[in-house]
Image (cartoon, rainbow, N blue to C red; front, side, top):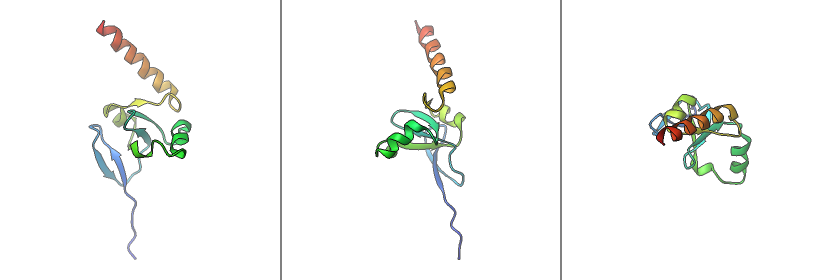
Amino acid sequence: MKKVFKKYKLLDAEGKTYISDTPGLLGGNKKLKIYGRLDCSSANKWIQKGYYVQNRVFFADEKVAIEAGYRPCAVCMPDEYEEWKASQMKLTLNKK
């Protein structure tokens, strides 16, 4: 009997889907452009209610998620979110 290996659909840095033998380390929402941990209580709450699933995406790592234009989740990645928020504030102040 031939062994079947599971394949995973991930997003690359350009936001394009590709198939991987390895599951993504982070999940995200393509509509909200947010990424976070797979055990995120906020994301899992919405998934259980039936929301979020159709917009769910996965990333190999944080670098790829950022390059694809996603921001960290404030709930499951608060330190990364605060860094992102501070960088956005700097960008806004520099434009003035």
